[in-house]
View 1: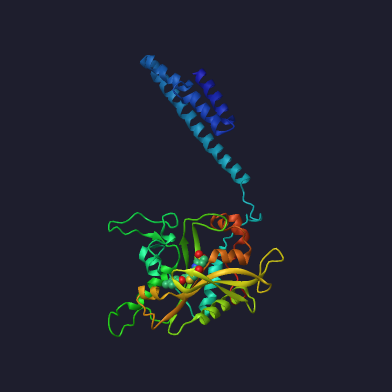
View 2: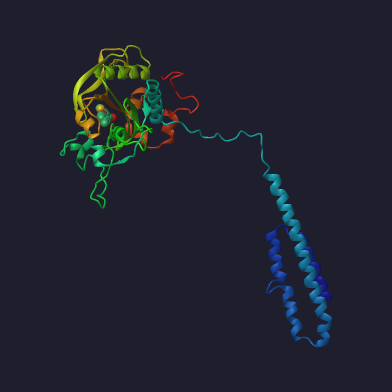
Amino acid sequence: MTDLTTLEAELSAQVAAAPDVAALEALRVAALGKSGSISGLLKTLGSMSPDERREAGPAINGLRDRVAAALAERKAALEAAELDARLAAETLDLTLPAPPRRKGSVHPTMQVMDEMTAIFAEMGFQVAEGPDIETDFNNFTALNFPEKHPAREMHDTFFFKPGADGERKLLRTHTSPVQVRAMQRTNEKPAAPWIATAIEPPIRIIVPGRTYRCDSDATHSPMFHQMEGLVIDKGIHMGHLKWTLETFIARFFEVEGVVSRFRPHHFPFTEPSAEMDIGCDRSGGEIKIGTGSDWLEILGCGMVHPNVLRFCGIDPDVYQGFAFGLGIDRLGMLKYGMPDLRDMFEGDTRWLGHYGFSAFAAPNPATGLS
Ligand code: 2U9
């Protein structure tokens, strides 16, 4: 019995002195674990006579219960103390400045697309859109591309495997199929005599969107953005085309009196076709629009080819039209001084942080476009 009293006194002192939960657990294992001191005593009960067991049993069991209770009590106290210490150490300093939040920005291509759209919208153009995956007919045939035209080659255009019907779809190489679709809608039969067809000339649309070609270097990317425009009405001529494009350029670059020249060119879908150059000055190392005696090629354009009108169900003897097309990314590079087209599509947030626009302070026709 004296041994039990000594053991209890020792264990109580050790429990009271245990500095942390880990030390307390070691004490519990040493006393109550499989080979612990109290477990050892409990095992001796089996070899005792009934009289001895009657006396020693309650004493050893009592010791076990009191030690277990002391361990539990000390554990609760240590855990509470540890929590208090953590709470004291981990207090939040609400006076510290918050880490800066990274702001998103408007990609230059989208900014330029918005600027162009706003200018053409002011001139009465509507925005038309269409699918990126197109039929060979809408992308080439309706646009008067000859059967053996190089643009129809595998290495120039991304083609899909032919479908069950043998039709070979492709990623559109220009946004022109959208204009084809728009013109074809002029032939839609109204569901009832009092319902108008979806689109009727005059057609005045601009078509911004992604286009694809097998091309990749500092000035060409397999995916790039184009904006094309189409005007169809009676009596449309090159004068309308020239005024529209000069007015657009003057608004876009915010210069007065743009000098332009139209160099003869060839596109299958327009006749006559031209490339529009605008006057610029390159003497200072960078390109200045609106002054100087140099020329800068800016876009392609022309009068819609009669074959294209016919393919789209419009009578060329009644209606005429002009069309134009230009690269949005290239125009952005020119206006905002970005040297490499590939950077535009890398998704590098440092580049975007530098060249991107604040969504709340982006240039617009009301506040100025440059
Ligand atoms: C229809 C009829 C005519 C669209 C046109 C261009 C001239 C042109 C390219 C220049 C460089 C685009 O960015 S680029 O690759 N485009 O020069 N595009 S006329 O003419 C059309 C379109 C649709 C039905």
